[in-house]
Image: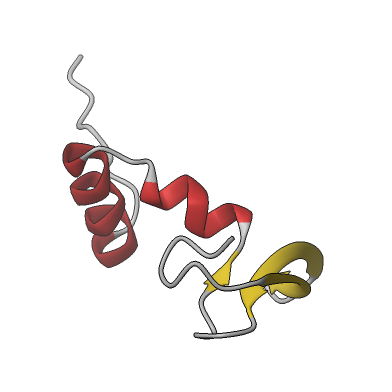
Length: 67
């Protein structure tokens, strides 16, 4: 059942990183698309979401080494 409109979810397939085929679901009524990546990101805390956005924008954070 679709979490947005309570419609019918049908099995679909999507691409992850344009190389791997992964299972997904699409609502036949409203078109909502749900895949494992979307579910994983929806479960992040606000702090984790901010950290993820920073990594996407600025790349990995490197700490400076001191001798």
